[in-house]
Image 1 (cartoon, helix red, strand yellow):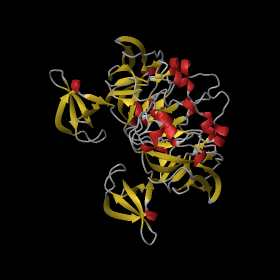
Image 2: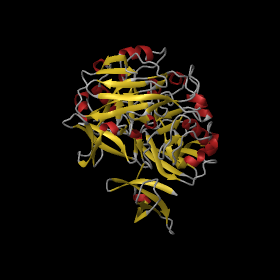
Image 3: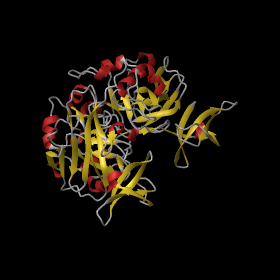
Image 4: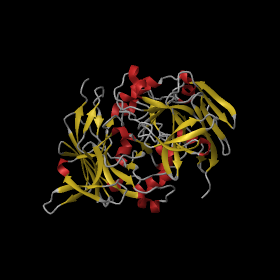
Amino acid sequence: MRFVRYEHEGLARHGLVESDASGTDWVVELRGGLFDPPEPSGWRQPLASTRLLPPVIPGTFYAAGVNYMGHRRTHGEAPGAPALPNAQHIGYRANNALIGHGDDIVVPADSSGKVQFEGELVVVIGKRARNVPQERAMACVFGYTIGNDVSERVWQKADRTFWRGKNSDTFKPMGPWIDTQARVEDMDTVVRLNGREVSRFRTADMVFGIAETIAAITRYITLVPGDVIWMGTDDPTLDMVPGDVVEVELTGLGVLRNRVVAESVR
Amino acid sequence: MRFVRYEHEGLARHGLVESDASGTDWVVELRGGLFDPPEPSGWRQPLASTRLLPPVIPGTFYAAGVNYMGHRRTHGEAPGAPALPNAQHIGYRANNALIGHGDDIVVPADSSGKVQFEGELVVVIGKRARNVPQERAMACVFGYTIGNDVSERVWQKADRTFWRGKNSDTFKPMGPWIDTQARVEDMDTVVRLNGREVSRFRTADMVFGIAETIAAITRYITLVPGDVIWMGTDDPTLDMVPGDVVEVELTGLGVLRNRVVAESVR
């Protein structure tokens, strides 16, 4: 099943994506929340004319950093960098930065312009989890979605934290939906800029897999339904400029598409 | 007014703290949420027998780091540390770590034992805010509460992020209430270990004040009602061991009290 969160008359609602016999995709409205048993309200609307929102707003927003070998070589081995904790690198992102499929990525007016995409597989947690061994970790997963970990590289390097380099408003597109049946083992992550493929890597090439990451986090931390873990990206990550359209596809899961615009001068 | 969030028959509820003529404090139950107009339900219960929860669960949990001069000398001037962004240091903490007044701080079994308190003033945002100039920033504040930014110093130094050093479960006590009328200009932050005062510093000695911090954040980021900003601590920050009771008082605002316990061996 594919769960969307969308805007209808100013409110956020949850729905299921279903196709009819003619091949048209519909959003079937649900009465409850994402983790309630899915109960259609009887209302549906065409997916194509629906404004999608981030499919979930996490309680806590985790990011597994430098988790592919190429990206690790580029960004993960600064001289004097301290050892990785349990060989995992767990970070955070901020909910203010979340936008949905189809929303605009806004480049702040005082940015250097070095704003890059990072296509990522996103794990959505479905069960409360603490001290979960790797063998049972996948049972905590509700489904998967797609993220673009937009990064302003000058701020990322210059600041002590990623607060504006990775968390400025609109820097975290996520969507279009949560797929509960996607098979992530053999997926490709594909990034396209203005329709041209610029990056492709295999999900199977993660340094630390989903189960290992959940096990590492839950040694110290309780994961709860709705938490998300962004699983990291691989090189190349390239500059985006206002006017560009960036797509992150996870093959078999979906395509997350956003346009890049400049902040309007106030 | 003093707003609490508390547990009643397994559910989180919002209430107001009120004293009667005999000096007894009561929790007056409210029908709505924290940002609804306060409407008592008619039910009240003694504060003393109420299990308090963190008074708000933020959408995003901000922390202004190294924001007092003493603490800055100790923790903020590592050799080669990059420049501060706009002279502010904005970080994040994670909701999983939040506990309320009276809950236990649990030291993980594999901790070095170097677990320290950091007493902090907490700002609770009440209005949606973006691009707010310093002069109007205080109008975005709903009220104030108290935080203890518990820190495992070995992990804080060794790991690439603060994920377990500052965000292990129970490491972020917050409460007891949100005070909407507290005057924070002249407060002292006082920390007591087992009843003995071990730290005292003036809120007025922050390097960057509340209005400056809100202005800096909202240049890039939208603050929304319920977001919290922890304003940093000053030295000394000392070790706590299982059995200790730690109190953080903000004079005129309240006292946040928690016991320290060891993780039970599984």
